[in-house]
Length: 401
Image (tube, rainbow, N blue to C red; front, side, top):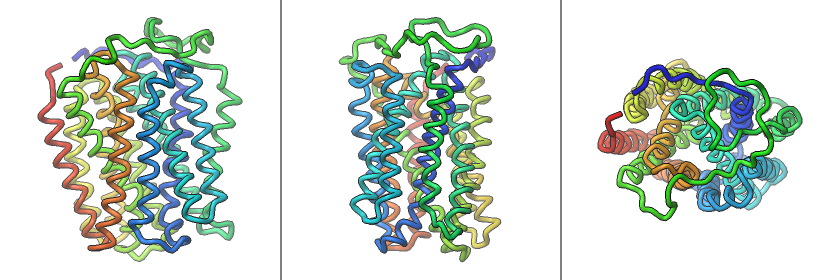
């Protein structure tokens, strides 16, 4: 692997970094809201887990439509429209006080948000070539920093007389601000050369972002592509299981209130932020599959510490270590799918959205259902099982670089 790859952070790259940050404020805001929403609605863990399933089904629908949408409207339109629909879903949760409205809000936000997300990842991969894995990891690190701020603000607002709902206006406000400040910037078409030096400012607006695929979209994918999809499914299931249920387990194990237990998500996100910035450096030196395997081992160690802990400091440390491992799994898993797609980044991103959607929906739902039957602590044994499957798939499908 070429160890002299450089990352060029031009204006279009920073635009996508910040768009991803707005996506993160929605994702981690709704994740932090779920335990409080469950208590407010008075539903079981399995029923509350249907909100994650709704996000997943929305993500699958978005993934199925993504290639056709980008061909018809271009990547730029699809990205901004996706962020707009995402915010509409968030507002539905804010103003909805009954299960049908909150489920619809999670589903709409998941569909539109994931569509925008996977377009962003395909654009970064195209725009940065060999540095794509590092840039995708770094972009997700920026998103996690936004997520840390969101979850911290959420825990503060949730403990105030205003309640938790006002905290969900953050993604709406941040999207509007970003559109006003950087809405005229976009990425040049994939046919343009990747820049050799520092970006010189706003890129041409003439490109609508339509990306012709490098090979016949009807050609079958190889077995490594499908194995990479299964690995991505497991990795996303792990991340969303932690996102949606770690605060619940933290509260049960330590006696913290549900509002204060949301700070546990901040600890995990701090680990994810550190890991994604570090992972960007690792991705410049090692193949995505190798980085992914190492991260699964770190996640297993963090899970063990969190699962066995009964005090807040130990559980926080376990969540931070888990986040460190989880940090690179989505960027490396997605990069791996694009890498073995035969030059079809948009189609690979659409397929990745489907695999990830199944993972993000099934992981939290299965864990919630197991929690109803056996308790949340026992249900978290699902995590090492998913880690084992992901590690086996990643090891079996590695290629020499």
